[in-house]
View 1 (cartoon, helix red, strand yellow):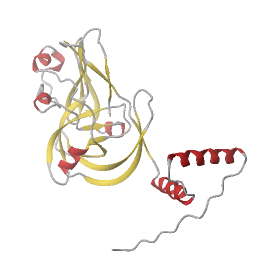
View 2 (view 1 turned 60 degrees about the vertical axis):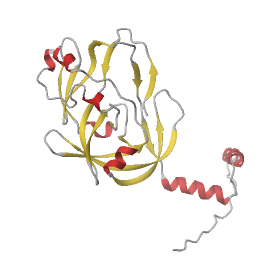
View 3 (view 1 turned 120 degrees about the vertical axis):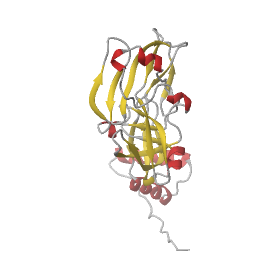
View 4 (view 1 turned 60 degrees about the horizontal axis):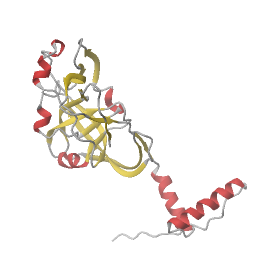
Amino acid sequence: MLNKLSWDLVSNDKLLSITAKVEASGLKSTCRVRVMCDSGSNATFIRSDTAHMLGCRIQTRQPLQVSTFGGGEASHQLSEKVEVGLTTQDGSLLRVEAYKIPNICGPPPVIGIEEIQLHEHLRGLKLAEEPGAALASGGEIEILLGQDVLQDVFDGDMRVGQSGPMAISSRFGWIVCGRSGCATPAPQEMMANFVHTETESVKATLDDLWTLEGIGISSDGQLEEADKDHRLGAKMGSRPQLGDKPQRSFVDK
């Protein structure tokens, strides 16, 4: 889902994403997962294997049109929207709806305990992700929280020092992000993300399928030719005549 680019950072400064370790729950089980808060996405996503393990309840199945960073061609896919519960710092449950996708992204960098101790403004904070904890579990992102839920996650408080990363207060604890102030041993892989998701009308999709079948279109070549005829008819002020839609009977077995 995230678009990755190799990028030689001039300062080699390790950059920290807005990530947290959160207890997630479904109908079957509860486990701690790594989440990323991403204002570049207008929807929330969960990895398919994580949703299956938790037993997340399916809300609906929808065809999606997903556009990502770089202006590439939008992808079309059918995705299940599920409900997942996220336990907050005070023990309450934040229920979010997320689309299932196979993968989100690889593990973003994590901050170490020695890096925390270097910066006075970070000392004593109850962090949403313990230093180095993500490395022990692999660190991959299992849930991406988008614009649709971020206002329910952050409370507006933050800590900024003269150097090092900033800390943002959330319902999961303080999240450390930004320039860490510590050099990386090698150029860091840059992650740039923009995800725009639109739900497509299921009825419109089914109507299109019935229309194509009704006029006898079955191949890509026929589809392209029919599209040309349709556009020509629209310019001339008329539309090609379509045959009656085939009638189908459904028999209970």
